[in-house]
Image (cartoon, rainbow, N blue to C red; front, side, top):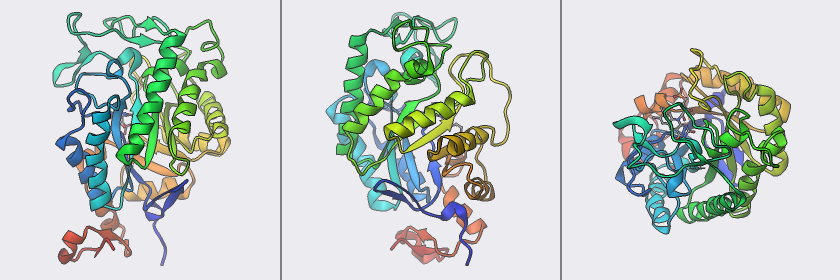
Length: 363
Ligand SMILES: Cc1cc2nc3c(=O)[nH]c(=O)nc-3n(C[C@H](O)[C@H](O)[C@H](O)COP(=O)(O)O)c2cc1C
């Protein structure tokens, strides 16, 4: 019997995923003072029940001022670990999925409204909070100008990421993903468009990677040895003078040498310049290059569609895992539907649904 590549297991350190489908992180703007709630249990729990191998939380910020909006989820106080534990326990009790947390700081893209309460733009001055970034360059013409970070800011945030990792472990997460993409704080250090520093944290790619690397090392040191770490990056800025895919390959090599387990290869969103219209698996060639030239496992993301496409990506070695975001908002049971579509025989299905007879139950 041939095995569909999408439904082959994949192991990173002590974490074995049952298949290659990942629920990509998606901000929900539904937390209160960073605390996850019933929404997060159902949002992540339903995709885990739906058969996804790994679900990753939305961008979860390690300090209150590092949130995009006041509704963003956090990991900056002890109550957050307890609230996330409810989500994690649901996933572990009622599915055989694994669950990761995306730890982040929004940098110069912080202090905004939620999409449905203010349109997602910068907060008015009376509601805004101070934002920080590698350089005092606003994200867009109507954004607040961030304060340039000093060494004390860096040390404070490195410790906040480390504490976030300890709380993530208390909550029982299986993996941490560090958000180093999409123009948020770590990404804004990496991109030469937002990092104009003249100290050892600006200039060459090695220098621009210094702060993200220090964050990674602190997270690694505060996270159990047998649990993996991923990092999402913007492999290509889509803006002249920005990061190129060659840089992404170099980042992959640096991070592999430092002990990163997998690179989540996204792109763009580092400036408010319009991106060219892109269709199909437009980011998968970036993943393929990083995977083959840097020799580090990768996840691809962006327009990942049906199971045949995922089989193709995995079988041809373009990525080790496929992240799907919007597709799983539309269909939380995408993995079950995919297994039925391609006729997977040896497939687990929630035991509560066994009487329906579609698949055998989870053992
Ligand atoms: C509602 C929404 C929220 C998102 N929030 C995050 C986030 O918190 N962190 C992140 O890295 N990407 C975020 N993204 C980007 C997705 O993870 C993904 O990279 C992107 O949607 C492309 O994948 P897709 O074509 O499968 O939707 C978000 C996307 C959507 C639609």
